[in-house]
Length: 99
Image (cartoon, rainbow, N blue to C red; front, side):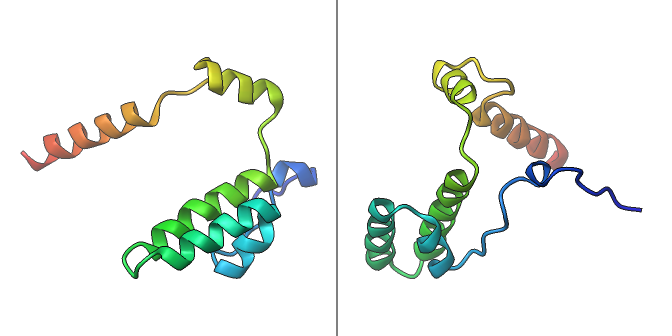
C-alpha cells in the first residue's frame, strides 16, 4: 500500500523535466537569457552540469522558500547541517570501508 498526499501542497512543486526547453520555460525572462547564454557557451563536457544547475534553480522558483526559512538560511540558523560536513563524513566512511 502506498501513501497518498492529503493536500496538493504536500506533494511539493510539480515535476519539471530535465530538458533545456522545460527549464527555460520555468525561469523568469531575465534568468532565461542567462541560462541560454551559459548553455550556448558550454562545451560537451559542461552541458549536463549547466543544465542540472539551472534545473535546480528552476525548481526553487517553482517552490520558493518562505521568508522565515530564507532569513534563517542566510543567517546560518536553518535546521540541518552543512553539505560540506555531510560530504566530509561520506568521504571518511568510504575511506574506512576501503581499508
